Image 1: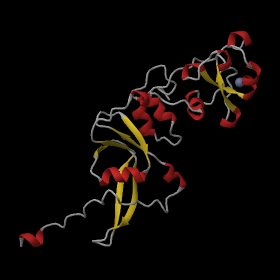
Image 2 (image 1 turned 180 degrees about the vertical axis):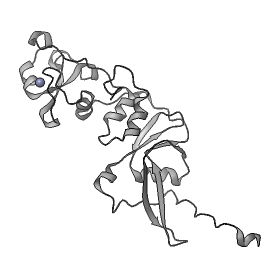
Image 3 (image 1 turned 45 degrees about the vertical axis):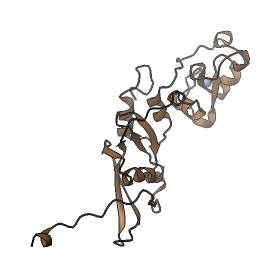
Image 4 (image 1 turned 120 degrees about the vertical axis):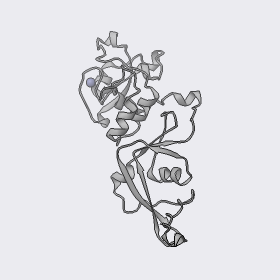
Length: 217
Ligand SMILES: [Zn+2]
């Protein structure tokens, strides 16, 4: 009697080596990234759904923090012949504290991240452009000792960049319309994902410094 009434236990989670299929998912879904954070809420990485599935399968997930849920089907399980299913939210907390090496605390300067920091707006004329119309502009030209770092670069349109040439802004009489700033780690996460979801954005924004242009987006 007691054994007959006992509920069947759900299948054990898929092993860590399971391959999760993304066939049948739209391009948009495939491009989605799950924000992985450590037990202190520090962002660790953007993960594809397949990678998030592996965190679940290996028991590393502490809790879900996101508002958006995604489901995907995995491989067939040998024991049951059933297809395993996996559901995750857009933000996932994993075990442990992921201390980053000092050099990883720095957000790498890339063209896309710079344009995103400056919202695709030219620092000299204020025009907004799509990426092909923009350039990385060194405020103090590199040939004049300017450094290739966040605080010496701004987004500029092609014509302003050409007009300014090898001069400093004051020499060219082209004052900056906004001040460049070094990007914080959390902001780097925002700038690195072109399809960031609202809840992921809000999570990362919560710890941005006030001067960030993304703090009040
Ligand atoms: Zn311009």
